[in-house]
Image 1 (cartoon, rainbow, N blue to C red):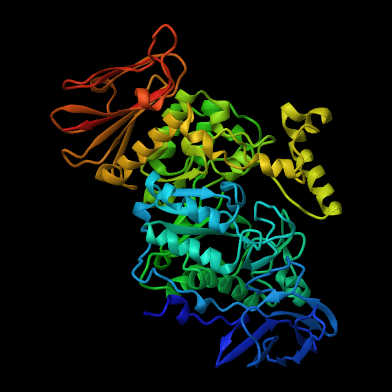
Image 2 (image 1 turned 60 degrees about the vertical axis):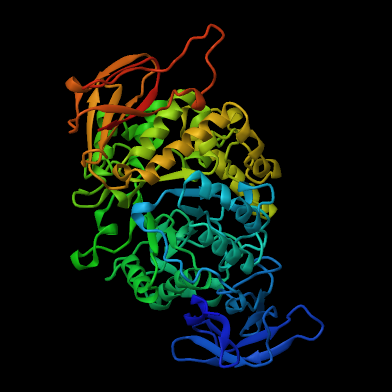
Length: 632
């Protein structure tokens, strides 16, 4: 059998196989004595003193340690503490760490080459609420459904172990260890291996901008993890440019490489990179990208930033001073769409008009703010994205933040009519940017996605109070009694309410929405004109609709016309544009087709648009909807 890729990966931190034994290496600068304690809670713990190195690390290799053995460290006699680079925490983030040998797993993906960005359709999910089981195995069972749906990349919200039994994952404490509530490390490997067998890639969300508030022992081992120069919303920022930062940076680079090699994931979504505060050169993100490219070959690996600054530098080529990441979340599209469809105006939504003209500008450029002043922030925001391929912009109409950071976890489909949701879905999946879906979006799921935690009572009380205090500045929650109705993040019922209800997919109105998403994703997969980044021209009409052409090859070119207004209106191609060459037209899809929507009312009234094709299409809309036409 051909060796797995993990065979060729040798970490430098944590517990790993080396020369027939297990090597333990930990960074603990300033400590005089570091002891390894094997089976620390057992009747006869075994103590081994580690050897100090000049860089502040302590190392020891032992041949009487087996995979599955648990261990911890004593630091100058204090502890025992779990390994900051533990590969598994079977008893939780405060318990001992387990020795894990990744080479034991037998991979079957030896010929897998990854998912290139121009084929990316991303499906974001939370392992704990995606299925009734709430485990890696539960996700693996649903992979055939996702492959059939037509997505190509499954993005897992953070899986690094956290305190308690439930969490979004952004309170990660043991950053190298898959959460024991979701399964074992090999369960995660099986999920990735199974995905590859179905032609699906796996992206993993990782958090390098802060440590969780409970159970993160890195700062016990070293004072250098926290910056003395920069502050973040979570307190002192991660130290990326101060004293001792070289090994802090190495810690996070190694974390990235460990997921890529030991778990074969196809890329990383880097959380809130605008809070990776680094005044040094090269920037940490540039270093991370360079190390990933150097370490991983023979397959596509995608590095995606979540960043609200609209910086072209993030995805720019290193030879031109860029940081070399593959893509960035571009939220301006979402914000304009939600302002238009749902009327949001609080907080940063005050910066968005939701006008057809501004939505069209955002699609043309990839993001809207290119240096204009943000009224919300009071400073200029963004840079010119000219020259940045549009597939490098990831857009959505829903994601975990934009749902879960609402008081009641309200999805867009809970706030707008189904017809508007269908039209916006077509616009998303026909745009030249890379689309992202959030779990359950494809069937307009009824379940909310709420913010949930399971911290110890003292910290949990602070989280609950802070959550409700966040919304005091919103007009609808100015009253304390109203804020008290916001679901308690600590309550188990909040978590349970966020689980997807899979049975509803087969009943109206969810079944029709699911069929629409299948059809749109099939078109995106099979039609060359709809590939990300291909030629796109837009025309606006009546400030209520827009027409988007994709592709410029005769016989392939397609036209999407989306009407985003409650009352009716008419699109005339000859008068409105945009220009698209060819001889005739055919209808590919209407979001008002009977199979995608609720049945006509009792009077038999249909809401389908009237479509005249001939040499120049004319579409008369009765309500929000979209049609896709092909130019022959």
